[in-house]
Image 1 (tube, rainbow, N blue to C red):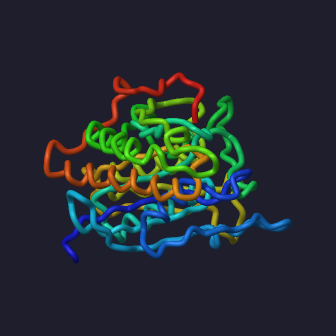
Image 2 (cartoon, one colour; image 1 turned 90 degrees about the vertical axis):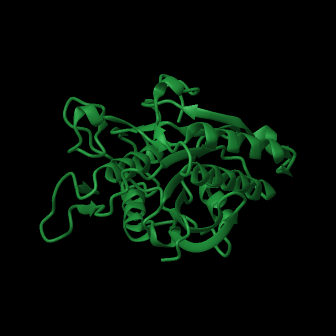
Length: 306
């Protein structure tokens, strides 16, 4: 009831050989009082996702838009679980903008993803337990089995030119920030729009991106997530999730960050993210967001990328 714009942000926690995850660290650096969860994989037994999950709310002031309420999440790199958490928060928080974040290569351009795809590669996740099961005769699994063939690839929704320009300007401003023996400009080299579908962008980043994107486009539709491949009697075998709130016109995007950002560069990255939020919220009063279109892709849809 504050009347201020609201932004839902997600980033990931640790993952396999990444003891920390830059995407979650950048989100944490943006939100006053938020602390990134530093955890260790247990030597034996299940890897509890709860300690890897943090949610914080704060109000920040953006240069153009002014005060904005943020709800920021660091979520575990687990199939479907990250999307479930983000959707439940979206239902309660009623965001005016959703920005999801993940990591790609060590040093590269910031990739602003144009879209997402209803496809999951059959690899284990950060839990080392969950793995999508492909239907017979297929090498990949659908994220939302009820989605139609026409919905296989879904453009995200953003003011692409405004956000891209804001990110590029913020990167150039902070290009000289040194950390880890490298300047920010050597690690975060620019901005590109990512094409879809890309075969290798069918892992956890695409999982949260597609499921959140699909649910926002289908208010009132129940999605069945974390469904057991073999049901067991007497225990939960699926998680139903539904957005009753109508967020069809709400911009949403996924952003890939280089994994080598560290130290003061995380604050610089938060500055880049801040500029992107400001640009998108300001443009809601202008031309507004449009669907991602592969005709704009600078990271080719056929490329061997994340």
